[in-house]
Image (cartoon, rainbow, N blue to C red; front, top):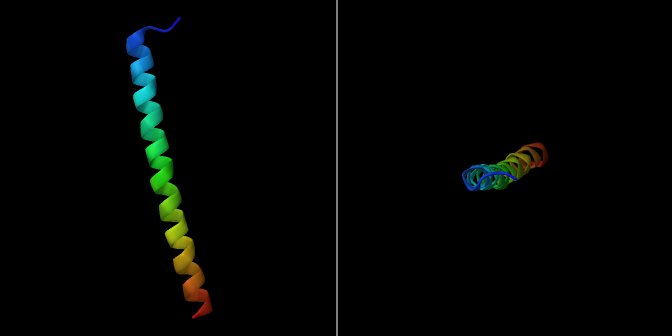
Length: 41
């Protein structure tokens, strides 16, 4: 079984990746909205 320190490191990495995915999806949505707005204006 993994040691507690390895599990803590894994949880920290997982939380960082989830945070990055959240902000990345917001960024992609904003860019897509900008592109759509530029096409249809």
